[in-house]
Length: 100
Image (cartoon, rainbow, N blue to C red; front, top):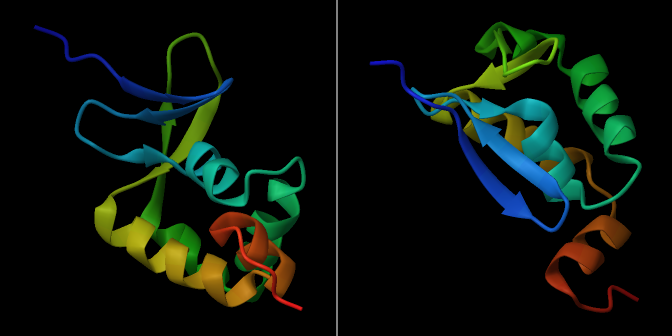
């Protein structure tokens, strides 16, 4: 029996998981950033920490090109790097507080 991918919906932006629980990095970063500029944040993380890609692997979701996915340990590393890279305005928007 073939296992199915898991998809969590947040508005129009799904967060996809592989059958074995790995999360699509693009989806998760987009969810954390909640902005059209999430690629800037991810690119900066990778540029400053290229070794993070060693924790990722490529996976083909249905009818799509291969996407980077990561297990929970790798995601924990990525999320720490995301927080180190985020600006005060990013935090203010995510946590809904006034930083200034």
